[in-house]
Every structure is written in C-alpha cells, then in structure tokens.
Image (tube, rainbow, N blue to C red):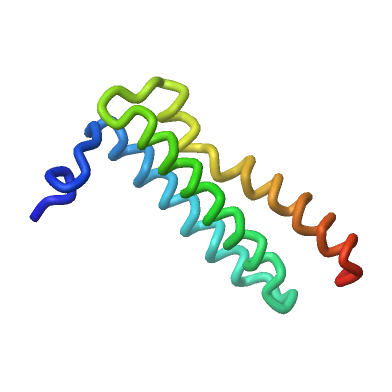
Length: 99
C-alpha cells in the first residue's frame, strides 16, 4: 500500500520534506558529536518535534495545493526553529535554576 493512497498529499511536498530530513540528519549528527552531556542534542530534539508538528499542520492545511511559502518553510524552517529552541530552552533552564 502506497503512502499517497492513504494520505492524499501533493507530490510538491516530496522534495522539501526530503531536503528537510537531510538538513535534520546533518544537524543531529553534528549535535551528537558535541561533548556537553547531550544538552545540544536535547535542544535539537525539541526543535525537531516542534518543526514536524508545524510541518504537519502546514500539510494538513493545504494538502493538494501548497503555496511557495509553505514549501520553503518546510524546506528550510528547521534552521530558525533550532535557533529559537536554543534561546528558549536555555532561558527556561535559567529560570528553573538548572543552568
């Protein structure tokens, strides 16, 4: 059974989704190589979950006719989400007294 038969989405999403996965794999590998006890990897994991939740919402909103902006956000949106996650997670850790 093909995924497109179960979830009818446009083929325009294929390239941005695979490019986003490639970027995330590269960033995940680099974050795992940092010897900080896993803090950077944890932040990247939080950003990963937040990004795919937003990407799923974008795909759900317009499954057959994605806008150019939707495709660009899916393609490159993980990078700003990682930066925002670093800022927010460090701020929250500071507020909780963990850092």
